[in-house]
Image (cartoon, rainbow, N blue to C red; front, side):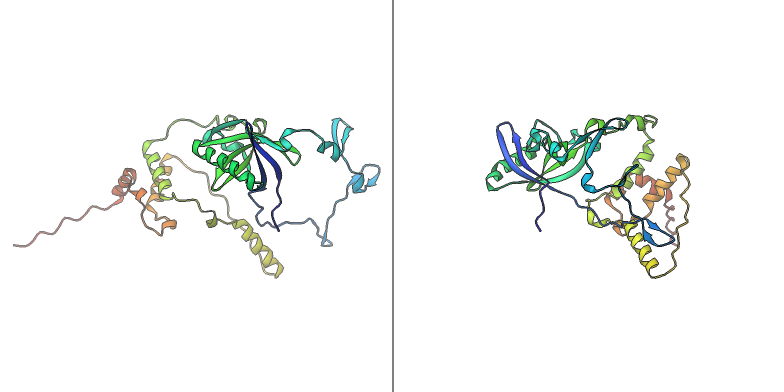
Length: 296
């Protein structure tokens, strides 16, 4: 079955309009859903929609309402909601262009694929894609979709364009209120060198195929064992104690560098040749024995 477009309309850049369709770029991963069960009977608990003093109600009698004061609501029908006039329902106008790194990661929400609606739209679509790529800019605009108006960004992605919904300013907590008590002083140079060496040793190209949901696998194993009547052992391991002082941090970083990395099969990477790593290794290396003298 062909994917269903989330939105159909046009991207407008000044006097240029490009008919497009937007599709979700992500999908839900496998999940295990649990139901609430009445333990004495083993039957599933169900919920009914009820009105106090009336009892269960027919789903056809349920409408949307906005509370304007306690116990008082303004009722709004689906037709009235659909009739709200917004130009962004059918047109995504690019009103600004910013640098790739100008948008804080906190604002990005969800990605969508943008494709030309037909062959006639493809030429203008490609021009926009390449112009964004050459200028290293991200297009900004707004579009109405599924009951709300989104702030969005457009950027090139391979042969296509990706749209990402963005959070509005009032939806993002200010980081300062969380980070203000953290010191902004620079760490000792030796500690920083050791940490950078460790990071460079583990650096590599991101491959999402290497990662999977260990918790989901553990849940599947738990359910499988219980369904077969096997004994289930619970994990009673306590959380590790909180870290100690700077001396402990120095020792831990040095041990981390000396320990062969599992990812490279124990081979030393080029990053391990940094001066800080050399110094650490030299301190650990035993002194070479002097060559024996030849007898006359």
